[in-house]
Structure formats: C-alpha cells, structure tokens
Length: 480
Image (cartoon, rainbow, N blue to C red):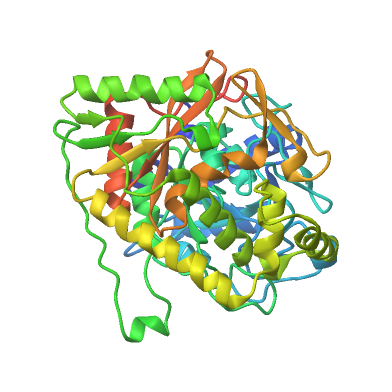
C-alpha cells in the first residue's frame, strides 16, 4: 500500500525514527492534493507553502519529539485555525478569520502535527452531504456522483483518497460516524464532553453544545486511540478541578467479548446491503468465540427514543437556525397538529418549545441513559448501523426531510436514519465506526460500535480487533 495510505501511527513512527522525512511526506500529500482534490473538493482551505516550511523545520528539529512529529494533517472547516477563515459554509462568514487555534487543533500542533488545510462541510454542519455556497460540493472518492457524508464529509473523503494523514471532525447527528461509513474510514464520536469543543463554535458562542462532540477520523483504529490521547481532556478552566482518566482495556482478542447486535429496526429500516454486512460480521465474531445476541437491548422503546432524540437535537441546534428556517418552524409548529409525528412537525415543535417542556424531554433522555448503563453491565458493546444505506447519490434539492434515499427498494426520508445517530448519541455514549465490507464490491459499509459512557477506548479497541481479524481500510480505486 502506498505510503500516502499508511496509518498515522505508522507514519508518525517512521518520522520519529527518521526512516521517513517530514518534507518527503509533505511533498507526497501536496502532490496528491494537486492531483486529486479538484475532482473531490475535499480540502477547501490550505496553505501548502507554510506546511512545507513547517515540514522543513520538523526535519531539522532536535531533542524530544511529539507523538505526531512532522505528520501532515487537515481538520474540519468548522475548527478555528489561526489566520484562516471559519465559515461553516455561510457566505456571510467568509471573512470570519480566526485569531486563535481551537483547543484541539492547538493540542494536535503541540504534538507535532502539521495542519496544512481544512476540509469541507455543509451549511451550518447540518446535512449528510457536504456542499455550501462558499466552497461548493465535496464528492465521495468511491463514486464521484455520491455524497461522502456530512458534516465531516471533506474529512472522510480526504482520508479515504490519501490526501492527508489524520483528521479532526465533530458529531451531533452522525457527522463523524456517517462520513466514516460512507467513505470506508474509521471515526470516533467520543463520550459527550470528553474532548473540549473550545474554538469549535459560531462567532460569540461559548455555551457547551448539548449532545455534540468533537473527535478524530483516520485510516486505522490505532490512529483513533492516538488522536484521543492527544485531544481528550479538560480545558484550562475545568482542568483546575478535574483530570480525565478514561479506562484503557486490553482485550487481546475477540474471544469472550459480549456483543449485542442490532442490524436494523422498524423505526428506521436499514438496507440489506448494510444490515447484511453487520449480520455477517456478527456471525464471524461468534465463530471467534464472542458471545453474540441479536435480541439484547437497553430497556426502553427505540421508537420513543427517536422522538426524544429529535426533540433534544433540534432544541440543541435551534440557536443557529437561518432566518428562513426560524420562520418555517414557527409556522409549522402552529399549523401541524400535535398528533403529526412527521420529522418536520417534530422538528418544528422542538425548535420553539418552552424550556419547561425541554426539561421533560431531557429527563426522559437521562432515564434512557441510566437504562444504557444497566445494559452495559451485561454487554460490552452494541453493534449497529451508522446509516441506513451506503453512500447515496448527491441530491441538493429541497429540504433534508424531502430528500429520499432508497432502502430495500423503497423511498425513505433521509432524516429517518437520524435514529442511528441518536439512539446512543443523545445519551452521551461513545461510538466508533469501522469499515467491514464493500457492498457489491463497490461502496464501503461500516459498523457503529457503541460503548458505555466513558468506554471510548473499549469501542476503539473492538474496532482495532475487527481491523486485525476481519476487515481493514481499503483505498478506493483510482486513488490507490
């Protein structure tokens, strides 16, 4: 496999041992960016001259070197990088130039990473496609007519195509998990608040976002753990009172792992291309000695969980709505009867609900969080889809809930599959996505590995064992 597709862990080891030069590696990625990025539009902001200068400095450096010393990488456009614009795809923010690095970006740089670019996103990070009026549309390297996912779509596309060594994304509605699945890479949505989101917000916004988390995307599970070691932990203020101590399990093998499997559900039906791949993985795990159940579930109704998630999700994002959506939600909340449980009706009510009503929804969410804790007394992880289908064709017409995807030959609103983001995500739980198959030999399929709260390294470790014993990252044809 070409050096461009090596894991960040392997690249970093080679750089520290001087078996690979930082300039040599940077020039490789820069050449690939010039060759492939026009078709992909994955990296939307970059400074290759400054990146090469930093690589030269890394090659000359003496003494102790950080864990990412000399590694070229990119980050999602929504993270502040000093001197570069942070737009979130909004034309009115195209001149919003950051004066300071986001905390996670600063930590990656202190670890020796060379951040040479930013990757594309949808408007306000609010789509499972990545297009906006500032930077245009990002395409999936497995099929340029399909979406790479969103909102960390540029992140996953750049990794899959071998344009960067590591990535940093964010996730409130599968925005790490969905692109990792669509592009065949690894992604980790951490336990809520484990990684500080300082410097990843709208201008002037400092309130911590409910449900939302930041985390890494990569080409191997080892890289996710390496990145988490660097970015996780409190900020300077919270650090005065607490330090993070995530448990780091050593499983050794898949034998005796306790695995619950949920390949589909009536609340959000999953295409056979995805559910079948997860079922085949579950069978393989059972043959390797894992205890596998397709019936074990936390003790609450999944359909109710989806309603709770839509309520708390749309309440959480209500402060960043564009004016035309504010008007839409106000109108729909008055027009639609309380019995209307369509996505748009639920979203409208959530966007304008009173705080007392939100407290009720959030209380039910935390009751479900406690049910998850009980579930994880008996099970190590839950395996489920990250999305209902493999990557779907680009479709930028109308509102998100009006856009249909084909699931088992039938149309399904693309927003229905938000179920697979919220079932665990709204309850603070960590999830790792790992590639497990190519559907029809053409499009990647990933599995979402849900762990207990603060079980981030457990979920990543299960992904590592699947990578080692079952299926690993494969470069897309034409980019390898």
